[in-house]
Image (cartoon, rainbow, N blue to C red; front, side, top):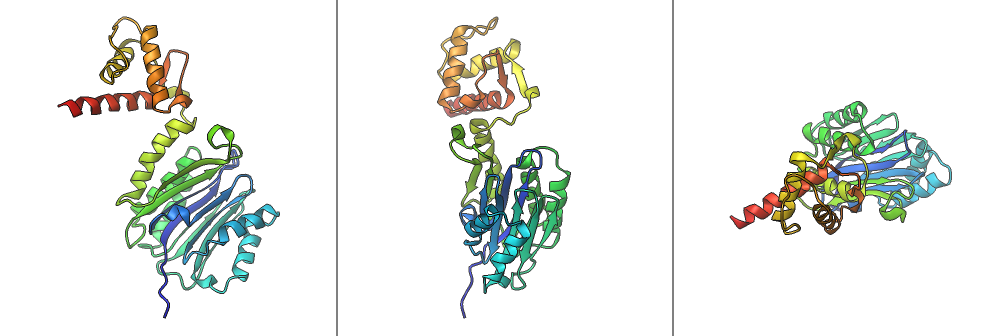
Length: 299
């Protein structure tokens, strides 16, 4: 009898109706789940293939979607050609926000899915049905962009018990036309945690750094004027890190501006650089954390 290595997985596939972004977020008791489950193409669709995953569902599904097939027609075509369909679980969302999903009768319990407006949540080897229902509810009630909604849904699924075998890896993949680095590709978000005891928390940690480095999602209300106490905090941190040789408590002088610019460029935060005497809260927090770490290392 053949032993099946099945990625016990829960995921969300979705489309943002405001801008057309398409994405998948996933967690599994399986290493490097991001290399197996999520598939997406900007302005075409997104596919999650899991359980005893048939990875051909990813590229074949996207080809069918690109040819004009809807999510449901694409799903039917994939299943009709697959003798192992009852071992498969798949979620698909097309470029119009139509969603379809399948949970095979041979998927390990608990297994099932919930289809919503522009999204689908699915999972197998779960603690209970509450995992997918809580994910769907969290996705629908969360304000923010697609990324915010995906993370909230995944955390809700884990809070409901998640994968009953535990946690191992997680990934988030979001596509947007020319949304990648310098507009050179469509990989707007592509972050993976391949092996970790708390992969969702680690995915969030790594994503925050990715967000600061590559994306422009922050609300302008998070901009702080570089003056008074903020100016002094920045200068003290830059001094601690060796970027500034003296602190001026009255002004943020050209030397301090140059030092901050050098630090920003060194840490790959050019996307968050400002020339209007303000700093993003996230950048300030990261700068201060670096300085604290440097001080603690000297103790």
